[in-house]
Image (cartoon, rainbow, N blue to C red; front, top):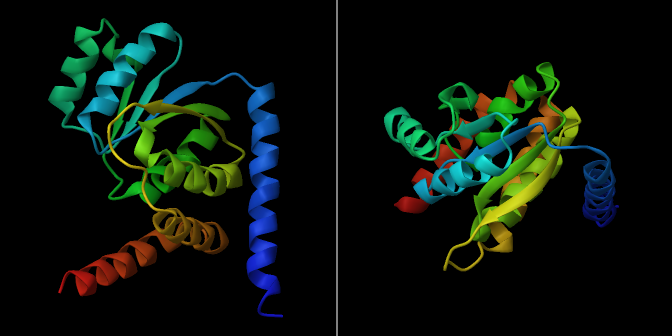
Length: 188
């Protein structure tokens, strides 16, 4: 019985991922979603936004407002297209803080912009949190010279994402506090 749970979870994630790929092929992106954490992501997104002039650009916990606005202004992107959100404190909350908002606005498909080394973990979370709200993602990797993050981080945050989906948005506060305690004990 204990062996069935991990297998069932993996099969479930595989089905969600497969359905996401089918949906991606059938929908056109409605927004560009940029994960904060590296200013190069915003710089890349400004250039990418030039190629997609009808899409709003959402940045989750990126650089400060002044710098972000400057980057996009320099690229000729009207600031009216820019949506800056500073609620997220980590990769999971990049998704959980905006999933319901995207759903309320009818956003069903986004370009996901993050660093190439970070994409695996971001996609694991997206394919759980965003998929739970009917939102599909199309990855757009920002090139870097960094090695990919470990599978451990992807699995860990995938587990946190599953808990968030199962317990609902109220779980975010609990997950955030619990995660901060884990990190604090590892730092000692």
